[in-house]
Length: 138
Image (tube, rainbow, N blue to C red; front, side, top):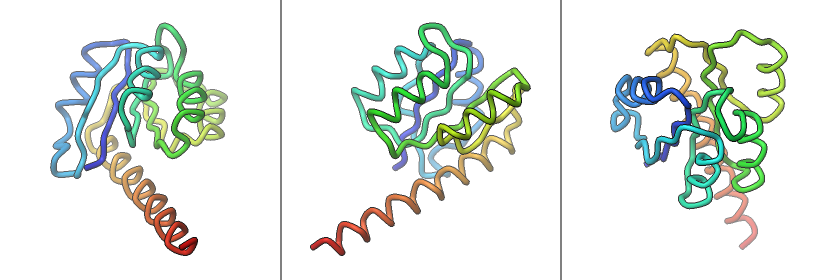
């Protein structure tokens, strides 16, 4: 089961993301919902996560700062940024940090599900390759 963390300072956005998706059908489970970047980092430290869905503007530290810190803790995390801002420079920088998808608010259910499926496939591909590499070392 792929574990998902949702991080957004707007409670209603977190609730919407949580309720829009049939997580079980996707083979995923939301294991934590936090409302700022600092709590997101603590949640990543506490429990292994696979996918992070986060806002770009949060108190404590913004989405990119959070991703930068999270990548140091868990370099194999996958990210989907959900933002209310159409800032090309921010999206470009997010991609350089390894963000798979950059979705704009208001959240479109189908777009979110397609993004989750894409991120899941990429994550499974990476973990499968790591497993093959480890077997070759034996």
